[in-house]
Length: 145
Length: 341
Ligand code: SF4
Image (cartoon, rainbow over all chains, first blue to last red; front, side):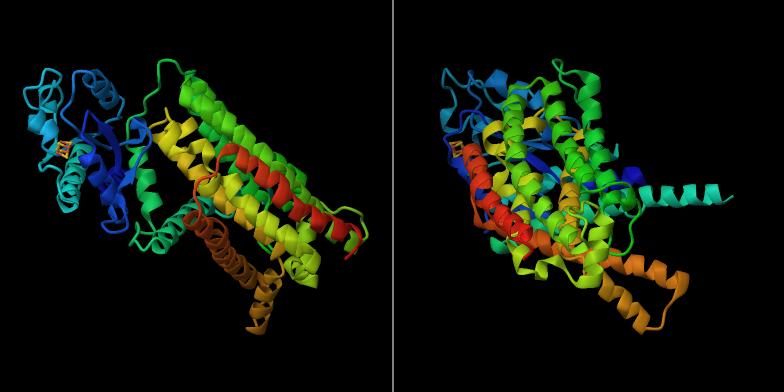
């Protein structure tokens, strides 16, 4: 019963940690708008955590530059299991307009397992919430195992 | 036989009411109500009132990471010490007429015990070996010192008022304060006690580390300070301690300033024609409910509304604020009480 309670709670209280991997700041602002009164992701239990150790979902924005890659990987490895990695925007998925640049090391999926991709430049807040909701489902499955 | 019975009774006090279970449920619900009210004031829907429970159980299911630089035992034990101290305080605070252990400790013991949760978080943070925790703990120490002066002045003012009415000088016993209020009406109804009550209300968010006074746990600047390295169950215990601290301080406020209400409850029971053991049990239950409702009201007034209306203060602003404005309010009451007003 206790196990079931924990699995249920895992889906209802996902805390986010946001990593900027060389983003143009467009996606970062859209992520913040998800938490503002208009879209209010807190009603679903989402909360922005200050430290990667507290997080359940890691949101990565930006094309993953060569400078940021080791830091991104290190921050992700500090997140306790079970965790979920969500890429936000087209940048971490494909490189977007930065593709082919000498300073871009992405896409992120070359280095870690990515659970959810939210495409768009920048994605709409509705799409972000949709992607995060999908991530909570995956979290619950991971917890149930 | 009677020894076993009384042992069972005390175990019930410690584990159920007013001990651990009551603290857990009450604190978490207060925390949920606080988050909901803040959301409403910001025109949001807000998380469900049960959100802190979800957070707690989720954290219980997460992995616990102990950093390589940490002192392992201290790092893991510190949260438990803080939690235990808070539950002990709750045992000493009388719930109107009913008091589990209040005869054994007075306000001064509670004052000391109130320091332990803050100390436990400081020690835990220091043991984690993180530089963010270092910054956070120095700020936490300043906050604790800032809150201590007005808190002591408020307690002195209350002790002097009740003490001079009873003719014993200073009265530090919480049971006597509760009995005095049940007989003579709540202390908050006295003009000389209103500044002290105000000062206590202003101390509560500082002691619990709630919003404008949360420089020590600033998540946007120093990664939640002392909690930066905590994950999983120990973090859950810290979150629980924070919630219980809200309950403890608000119920201390009820015990010190609003104690007269308990007498009314028993009067209601007497009017209904109930006497004996059933009335006693019912009185305790009713007292618990009324205590929780009052705590929720105080939380909304002095934590949620302040949270929604203000931005975070810098650490030196916190210190200055507590040692000037709030201390002046408390001192005013103390002087008035000294001259017997
Ligand atoms: S996806 Fe677009 S908005 Fe987002 S970081 Fe990349 S370029 Fe900026």
